[in-house]
Image (cartoon, rainbow, N blue to C red; front, side, top):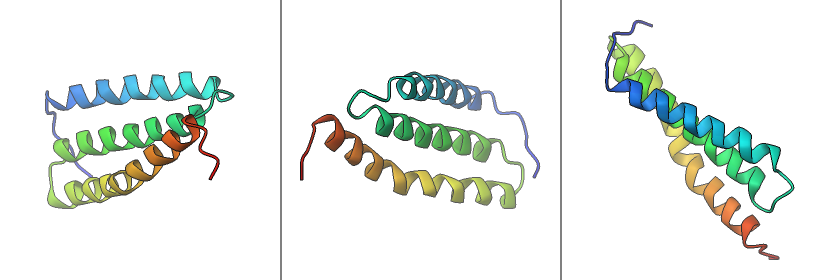
Length: 94
């Protein structure tokens, strides 16, 4: 894999760092309803941000395709994890 520097990818790395901090913060408070699912949702966001940044910085097609395909994992997981988080937070008893 080869990469080139892209200054606007720094914002995505910053976003991933903040999102990771939120995941760690909520995981420490996992006894709160929905906190564990929120931590997982934030980790999905970290994967999304990092994969997007590395796709932008990819120098060749193979690198870009690898990171784009990794993003699709987070695209599919995000709505499911958010739904689980909302149901846990709302104490759904179904």
